Length: 347
Image (cartoon, rainbow, N blue to C red; front, top):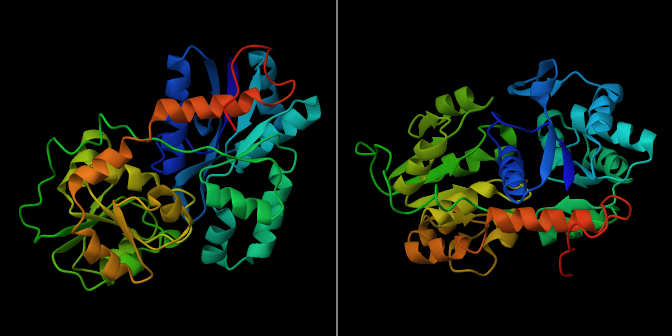
């Protein structure tokens, strides 16, 4: 297949969307597909206001359209609702080309948290963006059901994976010799939508550690001086921090999935979280985490969960399976795929 992926989230951005798309592209290419990526590094950019780590591409439908025409894809997937996603959407509509879209981020909730825009207005924009999509790929069943309840059509579940060769229980650990145990860890963007004060304000034994960076870091470091903020980590260094933890605490109320939870579990670290969409679908009833409205109670219960159960459960998620599911949904789009290229997934 010749697949064109248009996305505003891409490396070196540190977020689950960029990691997911990068891994899926790698797997598709390993399977023999030709994948063209339309990403911010191909255009002039400007920093996102209040979030300079995120570049916004300065591009329109004409610029993306030239890439579409030159590549001649069998399928187009628009992963994000940013400038590149909007430009790719317009370019496809002008050509009468079918396309799929992805719902990775609850932007209406994020925008409400930042500037107070009502959710109703945010989801009006989301419905308008995804309305022409032949398949809106959502990361979990509950997210898909929520989108359908809000008026979106053709919503499909597209799950996530984890790199078990990197996030593994055996390997080097971070230097935590000066940190009292147990270590309660959070990894991700240090931003208002991640609800980090709900974690950092907990009365817990041991040490609270935050791995990551973002616009709220300086404020939170000042507000919670007893917590350890170690900055953004990548690759083996990130995996070492996971292995060093006793419990992974996931306070977010808005994440659609929470890829970091799988990375923690694959490292042998149990998860404590609120019973919201992402954790409910990722953890389910598996004995690998503790879900509770009382996040402190969840964190303390998670200390009793054995490492082996976490690793075994995480092994059921893989990037090859994620990429295969993605390709399968593309195969169901009339007119988008050359006949007989790939079989569709089972219902």
